[in-house]
Image (cartoon, rainbow, N blue to C red; front, side, top):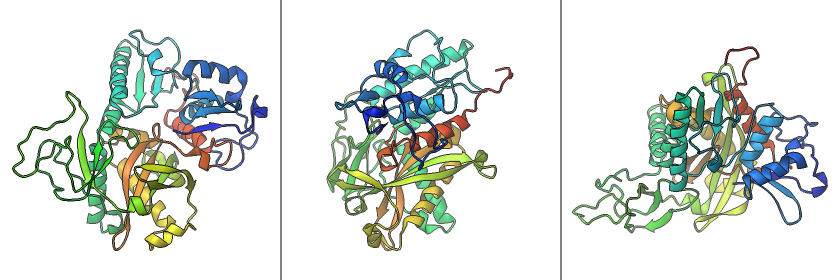
Length: 404
């Protein structure tokens, strides 16, 4: 996760957003959420990691909190930020959590991780929200319970991306049709990647946790079987985490990864009257299993483009938007990809074949992965503003006088 903030404590009472990457702001917009009377209560309520001060008294705010504050102060929405523990009680909340719209009294905009502990807590919250809704309070989660369950398992997104690639191939768009091979025999079927260089991955995991370069070896938690292999699988006892493996792509080591930050904006000709726009594309180099910072926004003039020619920044943008639009066109978009109506981060790798081709390694919901805000202009609030604007559009404010 990344943080937005001010660079000097003399701006304690508020500051002006710089001109580039403003989202819905103007050059004269102020940021009152850094003022003492708003910042301090948020710091007390949410704690370190969300709202805090560095030792030199510089203020920092988590990207998701900044997004919600922009919703509150710029878009004039009824917003509150709370840790999960404060709202998972059996009593329906009497305060106005998150934001309301014409269709809902309360929308819980979730900032969540994919680990098992978080999944269990959000499952409990989903149960409570259903109970509150049944008692007459129109509440919902965003993302929905069906989407974050789908997201948690990882393999579902991979299958969806495989389908996008297959459809591209059938349409003759072979530049969009490459996918790393994944062994889908994770329910004790016969392994389809025997003696291949693979990477272990797991459901219910965040960042690079449980990602292991296996070489051509096996891992005890893999549940696919080798021919004649009848040994018992030694996975974690009673653990719902699903382990699987995927073909290793050398481009990660040699080129790194691109991260396309995409936000939707109103367009009468777009699908459901919205159109995806690329806010920024970040490049990360890898060393071992960890991304190394600083990351930077690509411009198209970087030296590594020569290594993957004829691929270039324009083809990368076209590829990212093709995949994004394809996911939004799915019949199950509402159940499994609804957050893409606001935005997402596509993590994109390169297969160094002949010719080299892009592929999406992971679909990162916008509430989860870092937006790499530090790569944009100070005070690094442009991306938070863009997501806040899209969120405000997707959940339009109540119409004055409407019976809602």
